[in-house]
Image (cartoon, one colour):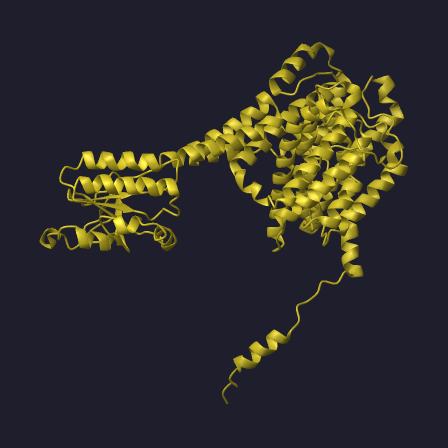
Length: 589
């Protein structure tokens, strides 16, 4: 007995009647969010202290920017996994921005910088400027992060050695460090290096060892990520028991004020605000690009998407709130967001729960942190930055493209030599300059045909057939005001070297746009060729470009024709090939 045929009409009609599932926030989802929030908070507490010190601010400020800004993002953000708050890169950019100011003004200046950064992002949101991320290339981002991570590592060596150094560039900090080598605190160095060693061992081998013990891979990774808090707790206990601050003359976190952050609008003189404007712009760009990159990566893993313009709104609001709550600029954290994702967080409720736990920490738990050695916090930062170093990417970029490689190396070098606030600007400006330069002088080779085929390739790279009566110039770039004159010069060069030329074909496969300036140049080329009794023709022109040409009278004055394909043009204009000379087998490779 045969199978009953499927009635596809009924299937389609019934599928249309099925309502789209609505997400229901259940107790099970809340449990998963709560577990993820606990794990993220465990990671955030020491990081918030460390990054505040990295920014040159009191440690409690790191806790302040981990409360209300998280609430703002949870309410407005589009990513389910992104965890905003203090990060290493933005912290060191903040330190560089306020380091030249008097020490008494740095705290309020950092808050003002947060408000300004948030305001810039909110203005960008009003203008729907999420596309700005497209102007920052991946090689620039990778090189910038690598340079910033190396600069951060150098900046934290002072805490490992227990010395005081100043400077915002790698050269300045290394010189200061060498000058103060005789002041090294051996106990601080021992504790710092021990913490680095333990953290590296945990990061590399703990999760692997747990998997070998038949613990599920996901749980093993989470244990490995939160295990550093045990290292921090052990050092706090030992430091408190032996009073390291007195007995070993060790720098510790010290008393951290209890309570929630004060809400106030930072007020600075106009001159001070003016000096912070450019750093705020750079921080806003870096914060947005870094946050969006992390959010997009996690969204791709979960088969979802983010709204870049909504990210501008949420990140702007978070930074504004960070500023008015006594903090400094923030952005999305790659490490904590990944922990949130791997811990099974489902919604932005994780951010709300983390904010509540950090508020609880600020009110009740800060006295427990006073004996934490700064060398241990520095070790946390250094080990976290190790994962951001990506020299292999720099090398791959250099091997693949010299232009991109130069951009990446320039970005990396600028971060180290001039500071993080200028590194990304140098990379973006150089990348755009090299791109513009490549369009100023586009590649325009003469092409010929592989014998016996309809394939046309660069005559300088392949053994193809050409003739002196019909020449084809392939234009490998859109034509606009910056390269229109170059096209005129290239055509003049071809005409000068081809005394028997009767037809010139512009092969426009890669031409996506012809602007008004380029149109004027084409009209001039057509006029000059006509006077030399040479016809101007086009092939492989895109319909959108052709439609725009129809809006002008250029086609009415065109001395030649527009052909659908290059082969059609050659068949119409070129001499008939001598087929008797062709081999039965032709290798076009």
